[in-house]
Image (cartoon, rainbow, N blue to C red; front, side, top):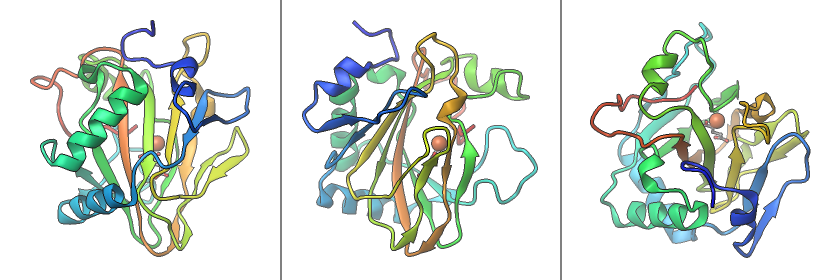
Length: 221
Ligand SMILES: O=C(O)CCC(=O)C(=O)O
Ligand SMILES: [Fe+2]
């Protein structure tokens, strides 16, 4: 039985087609064809219909750090309901621990420089972001399209980068085996050089999200 808000390698690998990336640095998994082409297209259309400039939970003065835009996916759209159900089935995590599902959209030149998805303890807004739901636990991120050039997700500590493929899911644990936050989860969404890039992001929390009290602003670290 996994801890609340957590999944595990055993659970993820029980799903046929899941591959674990061979690295001692972090628990990182790839699931191809997690979403169908039709689902990807429907999610892209939802993102196109409604997006706003992405923000940072902990701005660092670099205006070029995260230049994409973000969409709060409408939770009652059938494709979003299906996505949420598949994430729950795959992760085994109680959906109460899930942040609202988001889409991220990148135009040519846009990127998200090297960052971790967890909130930095001691940062100015740490309590604002973590006091209700706790820290982020696992990240589930799926690509919705192939990008003509650029847009790879680069994990420097692993020496691997992932080229977007429609429907491909990346999953990683933001903590290490000792339970401490894992800086080796640092990743960079490289600039798109041609075409567009779309992904969905699902972050899970240590405690239930607490819809009524936690601000629904963009919660990226
Ligand atoms: O777009 C990507 O490749 C990564 C996105 C990401 O790291 C994030 O939104 O936190
Ligand atoms: Fe990230």
